[in-house]
Amino acid sequence: MNKNDSELMSLSLEKHGFRASGSPLDADIAVYNTCSVREHAENRVISRIRSHRKRMRDRGGIIVIAGCMAQRIGEQLIAAGTADMVIGPYQSPDIGSLVSRYLAGRERHSFLSQEQGDFSDRINPDLVRSVEGPEWHRWVTITHGCENYCSYCIVPFVRGKLISFPSGRILDYIRLLAANGAREITLLGQNVNQYGTDTGDIPFYRLLESSARVPGIERINFITSHPKDFIEEILHVIRDHSNISRSIHLPLQSGSDRILGLMNRGYTVGDYLRIIEKINALLPDYAVSTDLIVGFPGETEEDFSETLRSVERIRFDDAFTYAYSPREGTPAFSLPETLTRDEKISRLERLIALQREISRGRLRERIDRVEDTIIEGFSKKSDDRVRGRTYLNHNVVVRGSGDDIGKKIRIRIDGVIGATLRGTRIA
Ligand code: SF4
Image 1 (spheres, protein in one colour):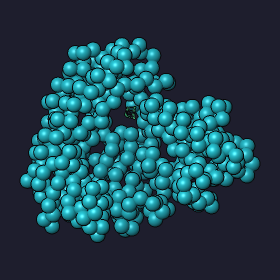
Image 2: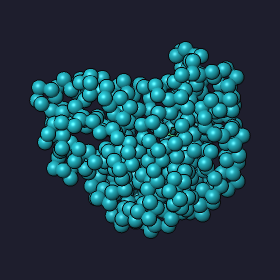
Image 3: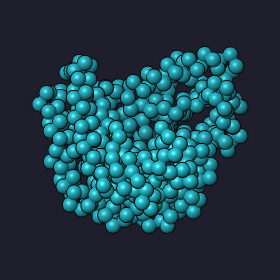
Image 4: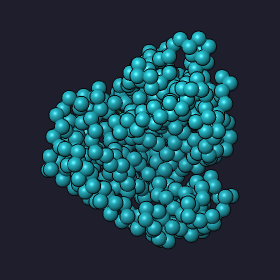
């Protein structure tokens, strides 16, 4: 989502006459679009900004901090002299006019309103022709904000309430993208399954279906799904449209019902397993990836063992695993931590080792299968090989050239090297 926001910010700055500099160190205005989900990321970016700031100060350059960290601690960043301007997620797509106004008068430096009237839209047809990234793949933000209040998560506080963009405008935008060469899109939202529940617009599965019908779109991905809102109709739409990715990202977070309750996730492990059974029954081929947090306050060895058991049972293709880190301002921040950092890391390492073994096994199961793949670029190791992703979101390397980039090709999987499939082109 931040990548899409950054594209919108670049567009806005260009519209107001700013030009991208060759390097951040040469820039007169440095813009940091920040994430606030983890403390570690915030600390890293703050130290980076501080060293950048020292170099800029002599030249009279300015530092703008945008995004979720700006929303969370923007006034502190200004008071500490870390930033000249802070712009929250509501207004960041309008950054060009805000920076222009700041430069003209140098008076207002903080734009952190979360009033409806200050919200800048994410569907901007001008973006169709102006991004620097690959033309064949484009991000499409369908919702902004989240009201699920998972107890560990800062997002509802920094991004605000759920705002679904009108389906008609989203679909017009996707048609425009397709007409301008996009072949793959990724629908984005903190919880895409809640699309339309705030506005009474069509439900997510209908939006997915209509997106899949846009001529020229060869693959649609969507992130992120929330298990509590993942209804069977979504699977029917995936089953009936071959251009929807078969890779479903479904964050489980914990294998313990007690911890899921403390996390305010709104489902049990049993509910989650029922979704996996439905996926299994309805889709002949699929991949499931997940997010898992270990060391949530109060997590016992038995709770953690339940997470390991769930991972063994479900056999995720991939898992993004994290040691819990408290975020000030979230409900879980007040819960007493019951594990040391070392204990959390030790659990995390056990989980990663298990998942790595399962991921390897899942990849090996692909050998001899024929898979459609969209080629994304050259292989890092060789100029006569290209890399892409299958419809199950597995990385694959195959012999090819620059002409293949952005195209769909059919390959037979021959083997696995590390976390990557190796294939032979058959069409
Ligand atoms: S669904 Fe939960 S974890 Fe995801 S953004 Fe919303 S509050 Fe955060």
